[in-house]
Image 1 (spheres, rainbow, N blue to C red):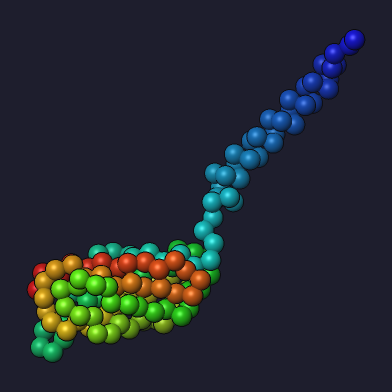
Image 2 (image 1 turned 90 degrees about the vertical axis):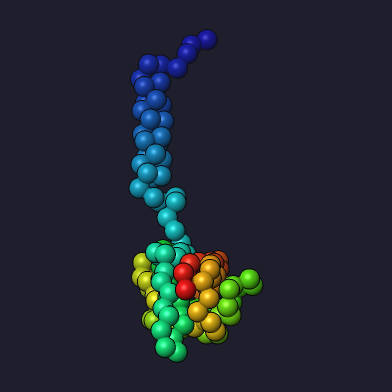
Length: 134
């Protein structure tokens, strides 16, 4: 019986090495780990506004995905220090890599942690958190 010739063995080793290097390069460059669709994330800590008739919270939501976020909606979370009575989005959709400003009204200027559930079509909802000291 004869073994594999030196030339064929060298070619097989070269092909395997090139394949492994290509796979590693693809992974490092993000081909396999790229974010798809709509990915919402809170961007920054947020702020609280107290003054006159204005009691609001403001925070920013980033779309880290590769599709535009549409159909943005909000929901008040239980155990907030005072009730969230309405949120607006500016702009009302978030392009890929873009940010929207979310401004929510609260019924009283009560200190504590506020949470608002933010969702968009095709995205996993997030809980945006803001701490208000007054």
